[in-house]
Image 1 (cartoon, one colour):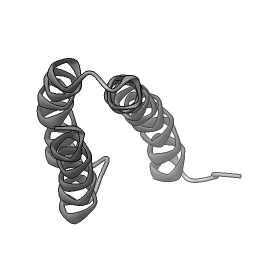
Image 2 (cartoon, one colour):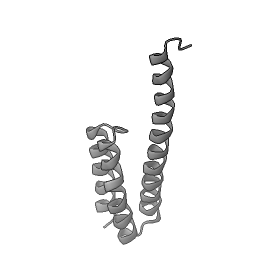
Image 3 (cartoon, one colour):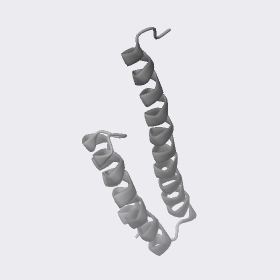
Length: 87
């Protein structure tokens, strides 16, 4: 357990940061799930729109430190490839 004032403060800050990052990850996963469902439905226009909506969310996660840049790029690349394969 944290004993020094600095360690107690860091513990408080970590809790806040964890909650914020958890919300961001959840929001990004929601967008990804919508894109996955649109791709699974087979509707190319809806899938393309869902992927377009998910892209900025993923990259925002990168700037906020939730995801690594290469991870987000890989996810976007794979989604767009699957949308392209629908046509």
